[in-house]
Image (tube, rainbow, N blue to C red; front, top):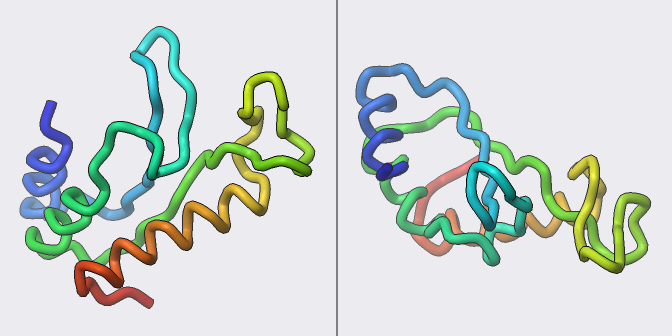
Length: 108
């Protein structure tokens, strides 16, 4: 499935009200959420597609892996359980804002 094409179609039909960014490794049976720079999704291409399709709505990062020192961090897995620890979310938001800045897409 081409996520960008599906998103552009929904945006064009004015059916995309909210973009929820999350990336994983694995498949539909066994997966692990990743930081946006560790998963298979090309966020730069995807954000360009959203912008070119006319999307100007809400976007947010979700379920970021926990980082060392956070409550949900599991050193054996390098992963989290809840996905809402502060350091991981700050990394995600900063990374995604950096992509938007880099491709010249305004945000507020």
